[in-house]
Image (tube, rainbow, N blue to C red; front, top):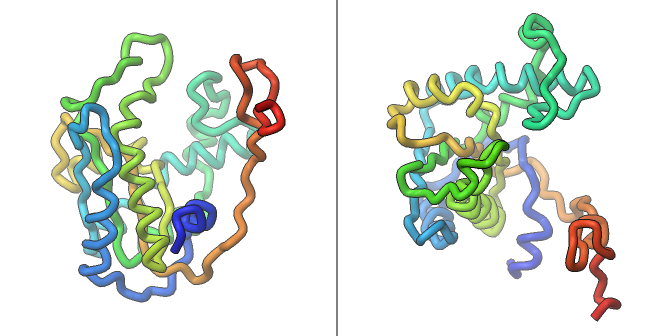
Length: 224
């Protein structure tokens, strides 16, 4: 597929046919994805390939508490897991919230689940002293994550970037033997999608790109 076609049609696939993902195809996906950039070219990522169904079920269970808060906040009209505005939803309400099966089912039905970790000893977190949630270290791992999804799409497979299990990171570390110096960045269920979407909805460029300043005029080729 052409690069722009892959970029425009890589969607969050959550329903899979059950068709196996051969090791040679997974190897090709990862072999190409590894060329993603990382801070200082330190290549601080580590990927765990999970096929065992018991382990995947444990990952699904670890996903549920984060998803409970997510859906409880949506029901309350909040932006879920917002790092700026604290939630007003009571813990008991969160604990009583039912998580749709569609949230955890991909971890069970995908051909393989990839757990992507980041060695925090190798990242330059330039925002670590700011009074906000850190995001800069993600620049050293999420290009790799996205390359995996792009490569999977090019091979006729697909997946979705999930992070709800990270809310239970200590449990995930114990489950998979991940050292304390590593962060869990993403859990990717990968498989053959039941259907391939070819038209995705995204904001237009002039809705989120501005000239010179955050409050500048919307970017447009007409401004050249």
